[in-house]
Image 1: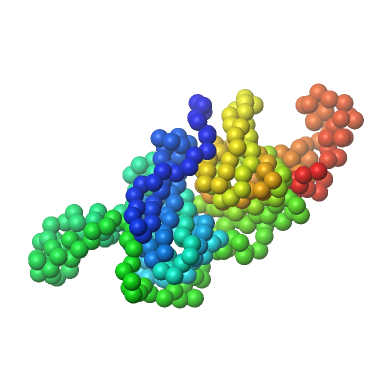
Image 2 (image 1 turned 60 degrees about the horizontal axis):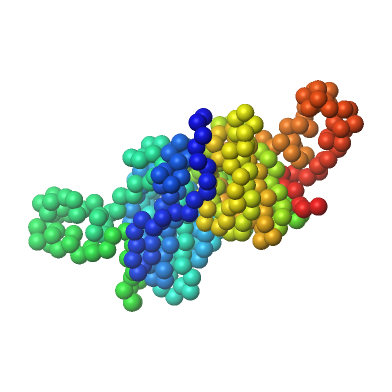
Length: 359
């Protein structure tokens, strides 16, 4: 693979108004999006903000970064929408063809911020989502003639014209005082959402870090979306073992909060990235490349999608390290070292999993 710039990037604002804004990463800024056929975007709604109903050309995972609010989801061929209460830590799998709207409560004291990451391989633009607005200034029905709109909805032409032209804002609006939206139904969360901050931990290492993995077991819709995901939180100065995805998947990582250092090693043993990452950064690790991270004093939290519903990782250090499985004689010969050195190498990290607390 030719050298691609792997530098982590912040998103750019695409559109917005007083109800909030929509930000996206573009392959022009982050070339790996195009290579991996991945899209990334972020929705930020102020109090009373409503992201109008839309659908997308890509299957996605949504992750609530901050705040709480309401999300409406209409699954293909469903006769009724699901209305979900959403809050920080919620992950949702959004298959092709779902129509969604998002709302931040009028009394909210914080913005509702939602991250979207997904697969654009079937989309219009590689590495970028194309969203189709159902309503608003650039809604689908603004493109049809009043004759077609009138026929579709059985309206007189002047009523059709009025209906389509009463939608001044595009994408995001702010509700008028007193305007009400449907109340969420508790049962609508079932099978639709996994809260990564409350779910059982898949990995928990004292002073090291914690992981929750999103897969077909705990969120069956992940299978339809074709993506797995995980939320990783590592403590101050802790290290995430060097590892690689061993099923040719890409790993797309958004830094939720905190900061730290990242190194990525690619073909021919060349270090292809060494940088600091901080909250708001998105970066992508090419297939089979080895990545490792060390947190600063603030610790670090990241949400990743992996381009397979049930990802498998190989680690090169720690108890489950590939090296631990290779016979001592082969290691000795491979590293061209003494039996003593090989024993020392093998005797370390016998119980540490994939996170190493600072010594």
